[in-house]
Length: 293
Image (tube, rainbow, N blue to C red):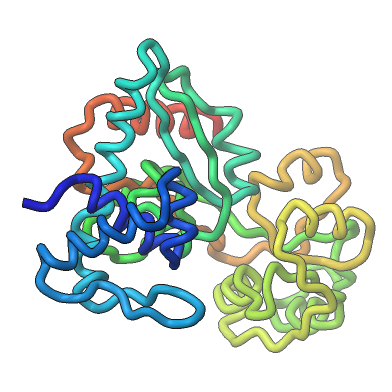
């Protein structure tokens, strides 16, 4: 039967890409860690990595093995950490988009039995971390059909086209006139593929967005600052600009017939569905976010 330490060493090599880096992460000597890998490969009956000058490349069998054991190894290591540190609260690793976490999640965090470790980033990379057992809970901006994960609707954000002054169109101008006026503005986008702008444009005007952004800034809070400075206009989520709109520092440039909305999701592994403490925290967080709207 394979030893648990062999699996821990295998997971470390898989994540760090080399025996030396994995050994350093596990506070082991390289020969000892190499022995763990050799023993596991003997147990499996075939090599788990292809050695190259730059890194250890996992085989297809290694990828399957990692997908099966990594979450279990992570959970057992967390249990081990708790038992090694009597009286210390367990760790919960929560990930999500930086802006939503800052504006909506952090202010709504409920009291909990956990010590929290926060990770910020975009949804797809964070989903992989959740699958790999490196996160316990995730706030996602997309519902991506993913095996082994459970999505629960957390909140709804509305995308708004905003600038520091109203759009220069006659009162009662039709959507076509508004679209032409917006195309003449200087645009600030989160990415070169115009992620929020493209979606707003299609729903508001029914045509593909053909604008070329003047600025590409992968931080919504920085985009808001740039809009407030008059450097351009953009599409931003309502929770990020609510105060500025109420104070008259920003203006909505166009109100589509149907609001452009996006669902946000609270995601966890289906394997953790029996974790009552994690479920209680997730439910409390969802309720707190709902009450903060």
